Image 1 (cartoon, rainbow, N blue to C red):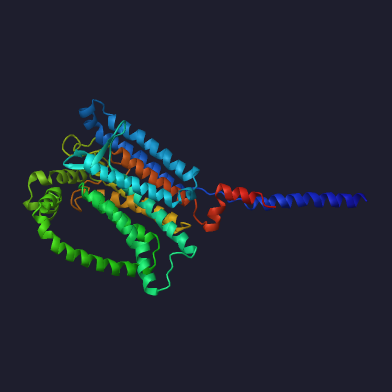
Image 2: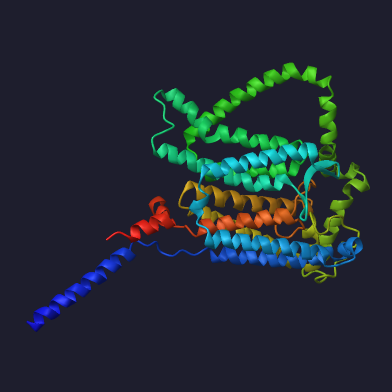
Length: 448
């Protein structure tokens, strides 16, 4: 009798253990952000502040009477950006952002700011690109457009995939389906973002337009669009361009009389001058080639190990914009080939890590976010280095996380935060992502 009672009590305890273990099995496994990307982000942020102080101390003291003025402002915004990146990467589930209405609101806000800055923005160096914000100073809506373009396209692609999974976006006629696929997958988002490109080019801000164009191409490639949609979009785009060319040939003679040609010439005279300076440097004036010549002198004088941190000479009113567009030249002068190579390797490592996270993303939303933001930061960094080394024509492109620019670096760090959030979901699939939401976890935890 005692043996039977003992066996019954043991079976009862084992039953309870099995029930607890079964409920725990429904809980999602813990995920961690990509440690390598986190380390690279922290190194670039700290390295950037050190070089910014060295490049800006003379200019800060001359303009503000405080050698630490620029670096203190940058450090505060960098701290905000790092905090936002860590919160996005660690605390907030990626699925929380996968709602199309968020993309629509962000698109409308960005479009409104781009229109506003054209008519009411602050004019600096003959370009109307800035909005004055109390406390924060000036702000470029084109920097927000870089962040918003990737987020909006990711939300759009995710929405289209969900609708197709539910059997929508289908047509009976094959020709109609072929044409609709081109519009849904490529042409509609392309035309929506082309509005931004046109508004930014109108400011004029050619460098931002080129960067956004490259990023848009990278997003289309990262989203895994089918070949049929590409063929449909290209075919229809050719027809649209032919129609536009015919209409333009008729309308241009009338527009020329209204001064359109003169307006375009005035807005892009600096672009033509920079192209001529790059292609024909021997015929350019010393004033036109001065900035890029000083950049090359700074990099060349650094040698292998540089003149030493803080010992550079070009930043003392020789090299214009030493702590903004041409901070890479200051790095070359003070840290030499070793310093510039370190910066290049950091961005190459960031690119490789970002591409790996994009490849392992669990869905289209994560892939577009990771791929778009990786290419945004990488493309801008390599274009800045190319300008500083006289590889491409000079243009106003900052070096991410190194150049002085509060809002732009804040947006870059937020972009890295989204990449960290995507890295936390590597290896998961659709049903597992749903399981990781708080509501789904609570429901499954109640199952017997």
